[in-house]
Length: 348
Length: 276
Image (cartoon, rainbow over all chains, first blue to last red):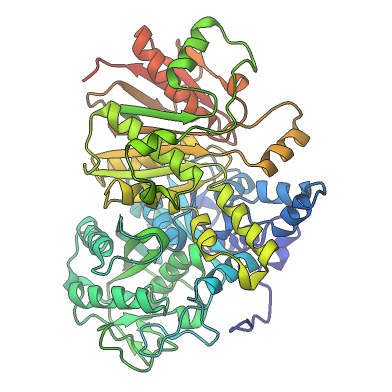
């Protein structure tokens, strides 16, 4: 299978020389950018936690090393040591000399959203002054092949929520948000606020969502309840929108029911599905969209699927929104929703 | 950060909680514990049919059995308002290597989609949720450095913010031939162990078997439990120690301290309470 997207430049290349995995290198790249924006005072002398979502970034998927060992050779200890020092949250905490909790969250494709939800709780409960929360995942042949074998990967550019959708495209990337309590964050003009978060597992099937979106319904309701907002307060929703037949058919109707008439944005047509990083990347997109007051076109979507019910925006669309919600679904029947609010200055 | 412990369950290749407590009372002798080839999960057949268990891997079976034992001690039904937090050093390692085996043996076109999906790190927690009928918040975390502390911190967070009334916290890791070989090369003679331990946790000082205080100073006047020298290496060894500490604290009515090393070493103090 050929790559759907061309990647002209390896953004994380300057970080890869330190003997880290690609996921860890991507994370360092994103963390550096986030901390440049937030300023060194965000972490200096403070209790700083790290919570990073990932999928491939914590997996024992060193195929070449395993193949060699399996055929009777000695294991490549360098590959194993690289894995050992690249655990995303622990690596970042060590690199920056942070003294708060470090947690690598492996909730599959909702990991990034869950990480931000947990990080926000650490701030709210006074466990940390600052939390670096986000997600990271690099493409590799192991997961790429796995999704292909599950018959959910499309050889064409993906078409979220579209009638002719034929599966997902994998992507890679990382995003990190620097979270501080509201009063602290005013120092540097926050580019957004976390209002609340909800999460719930379907307890239904390991690889398919509940047909009536049982867990997503509760996650979204918990998110609204924790945020103190109602559906009418939501300016737009960023959907998970993987472009698989089942995800979109479950996610769309639930959103149409619980957030009726609210503009929908689907971004995986631009990025592919970055697995454990996706929720964090899309949270950053949401903050960007809130700040700019507009949504990008939902690339790949053109033909309405009546079964999906929700209709992502096709064109660049102005939205005067104070609040938005980002939704993630995952293997294992996990669901997560994050409510974000517009900040005092644009993110970028 | 304080948590009440309402139930504890262990399944491991080095024995039961009671055996470990006897071992402590007899005086620790490093490396003397007999080790089974693998943790025995056969008692799951008392809870589930062979059909229900047929596709469940060893790692998940350990988690599920430990969860049942903890729920039994807590005298709870499985459909309580309960979240799941599962901490591990390496995740379901056997299923990961099973998937790599399928790629090596059959090529990319013949790789096993079942092994791939089961190697995803949140599948064990999802399976526990499914079989216990827990439609609930669920979190999996994977790190060899401080997984128990991280998992307990996450559990405390969810309880403190009212996301659930109780948390089923599971810590688990399994032995694999590659990991055993690597550990033997890096630290000869130090064998990995495997097992899962589950705790039913409540917020604060609610009536439970014990209260767990996280992040206490190391100079606490308390007995210390550190059994790594007896049962071998595991990223989640502090959780095994914690299970023993809960039993010891109950038995002696004295506080017991457990230590987890790593980037930010942490101490956890178990204080006994009257049984509910």
